[in-house]
Length: 525
Image (cartoon, rainbow, N blue to C red; front, side, top):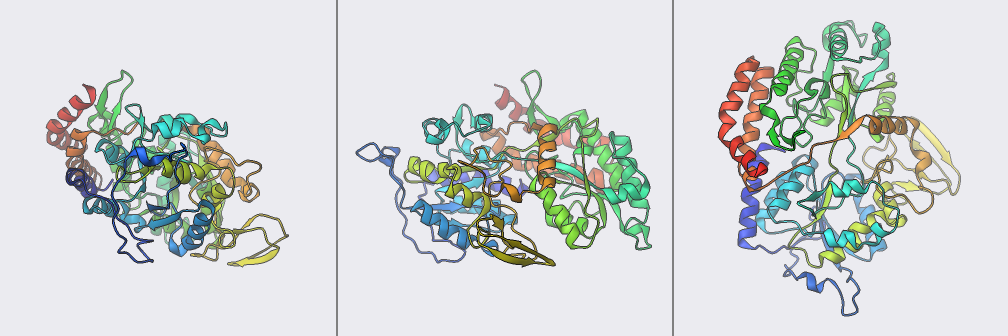
């Protein structure tokens, strides 16, 4: 979570709740105008009709990030078909993905609350703790979906409960990252896939010091890149797991059931030492500290880096496809967790939440959230997108990039991505390999999922453990921004600016002592 956002978040929520702001909205705020009149919140008593039926909302204001198709990717077609299937006017507000949570915070303090919002794990915990999210427990427990027998991995939903109450709904598992290595680079140097940290570090050294891209200049390749030295959201360590190993840089509950500050532990000092060594030796991309995930992908596609830890499943296919598009050897090794790492971490899934300003939360849950996994047309929309824009069953020949494919009538197939037409659309919000409820009948797009995606998804599921539970309370919210400022300062100073690990840990332990003491007291009371 961005530090500025964390600082603003608690203030924004407190102000908004204190002033009892009511929500108003605009139809697709990025394209379809505004000036819609605000409507007052109604109580849950109005969620059902006189006959006991749950009332279908006439419209729902939805705030989402890039996990839902953007306009450039064909969102208008998806929105139109979704509205037709649901019989509800869906009013999308979709800020730019990279600045999403800054806009979310500003939206809450400004009073224009959405009815439904998609939140990452730590934001979910914080907004729930501040009273901004509706309690969905009864809606879920009494839902047709829960009773259907189609829902799997119910422990995912249980893991979303905070003090026994459910404030969000996840239609899919959270997934996580696996470390990909270019097989061609391993073969070029006669290396086996590393199994421990010493072998891994030696591989990075050789990838950095040798002319891996055949340019004649050994200095223009390096071992590993990542989007930051530490992740901006939980589980924080997923882009550089080989360096963090058993360290976790936030609060977690230890084996004795006691909350502790992982950043202050000796395990974190060891992680800093590993990061510092690789960075100073040049084995790690020097721009790691400022990289976004797109920057990392582009460097990987340009044959400049040999190791990239990124999402399992569908992204394994995306990476290989883009390498092929660039004329490069696309075979990748999905490396098993190193001996010292033990397991990869599966993040808590992003969750769909209903705000406390929403009218008819029961109706929103039943007709919007629950239908995401209806096993039919609506689930297809959330999984594959809009028919005719993202997928089709028509008899046709489609050209994308240098590829041409022909399908017979009735064959389900993906269409070129509206934003990048030289590639096919892969999936929409729900990855079918991660979905928490199957289709009624056969998954229409199952034949289009590549062997690579299936294989890596299966390996990750075998290799992963769930991320530590995200927790939030008023005390943690008050100090979170300052604490993360300090943590990021220590990581930056130690890894990139020459500060010793010992001095860095002393800086943290001294600067954070009073905040950590108060936070742990609140968590362990």
